[in-house]
Amino acid sequence: MRGKQAPDGPFFMPALRHPRQSTEFLPPKDMMTNDERSLYSTPQTTGRYSASKTSSSRFPILVALSALSVLPVNIISPSLPKIAGEFQADPALINLAVAGYAIVTALVEFVSGAISDRFGRRPVALVSIALFIVASIGCVLAPSITVFLVFRAAQAAIAACFSVALVAIKEISGDHEGASRMGYAAMAWAIAPMLGPILGGTIDELFGWRAIFGVLAALGVAVLFLSMRELKETASLSSRPTGTLSQFILAT
Image 1 (cartoon, one colour):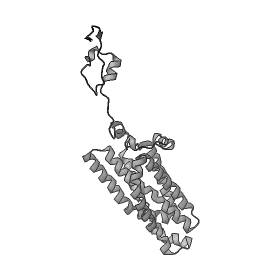
Image 2 (image 1 turned 90 degrees about the horizontal axis):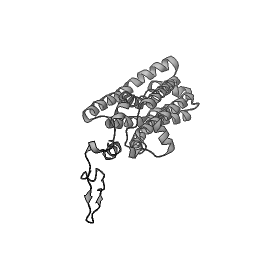
Image 3 (image 1 turned 180 degrees about the vertical axis):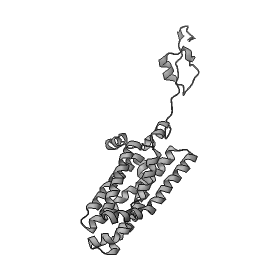
Image 4 (image 1 turned 90 degrees about the vertical axis):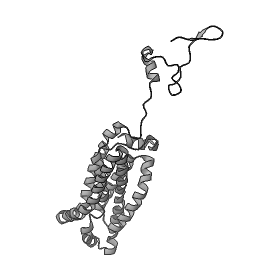
């Protein structure tokens, strides 16, 4: 590269500018060194959801999250008389196991979207599944109707997985593909409550009503394991948490 002559005579090399500012003084690429090429190469921008994230996130686990989020709603409906008889509780009180669960589910879904925007989809999903497992085990071991209803309400934490699944599907898919995938997730969300009473009644007849919650806990463990392996973060970096614990959850 030739320099320009200053008014007083000496030659000087023009200051190279960043390619975003100007390309006026850039030399031909074949005259650049490797360091110069790397310095002035156009930086790669990272979108909201990169190709690597798209390939690493698994659509089936999102469908499983959608189904598990609504399966517990009415799975114990056939067993309510037996539960009331074992705890010697009023039938109107034991109905809170279904009605109360639905109310808490609505509250969880109301706030879960904003929480996942703040802390990320993956941490919210993992925490909600973990709470669901603990609550299901609590229902199995409940010694009284009060303890049972408390743990039953805590099971509603799994409802956060439905909104997380829908948002994650939207973030990893294009417009046409996203609509198709959301349809599959919605189908799983609609079919699971219909199969729930059949599954719950069968388990109750074979093993008793407490085994229903044991099966739910086992399903939660399986989905948690798969989520830790397959579910990757889909939210933008700006919405991820900065705390040490949250970063550990994201990295695992």
